[in-house]
Amino acid sequence: MKKTIIFSGLFLSILINAQKNNVMFNPFSLAFGKIQVGYERPINSNMTLGLTIGAKMSSGVFKISGLNTNAIQTDDFNYKGIELQPEYRWYLQKNVKNYTGFFLGSYYRYRNYNNKLAIVYRPNSADDSKNYNLESGLISHTLGFEVGYKLPVYKNLFVDFIIAGPGVSFNKVTLDTSGVNIEDQFYTDLAAAIKEKYSFVNNLNPNLNFKKDGNSNRSSKIVLPAFNYGIKVGYSF
Image (cartoon, rainbow, N blue to C red; front, side):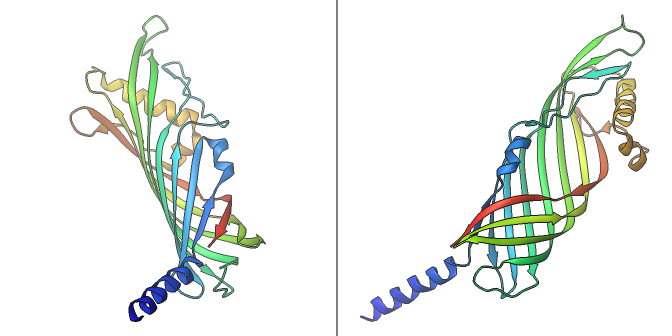
């Protein structure tokens, strides 16, 4: 009898705690070639911790066009990889059962992407053409704040809105050049092509360059503004 009471108490405790769990899915991330799922759990009466996990499989319908200058042409960028985003939220209205309404929060986002890049390099003229196939990588660390609203719609279903999420991202772009003999001028021309294509990079990173990073890699660090936004649908249990 005693064991039954203890087991029943533990089971009831699990059920009570389970009612505070939230799972979410971002259907709109599919348009960007990503799958995103999230989990949120309270830590007190109006604060929660969460984690979003994402897998990027393609550029989706929003393709990032490649570089196209006199010296360098590339195909479109099509990064793939994973992303993780822990979050902290403070709900302005205490609602132990559903944790809904307006909230303020902070987030950290980690991304690890890679892309096979075909490059045509013409250092002197159109007749002097070289072709490189390189593995490009992107590792990004983002810190930011967010404002959002969680709207209950039916029973345990809800819609989660991130209204604004400004932040700053610290990015490292790498090129794996193992087995490929590339002259130093190529990296200077590559940095110039990036600045020409993306003028904001030139404004924020005037000293952009690709330095040696290990025996066979070149890398460059880029600091950029970041944003966190989206709409998720979820279920509380």
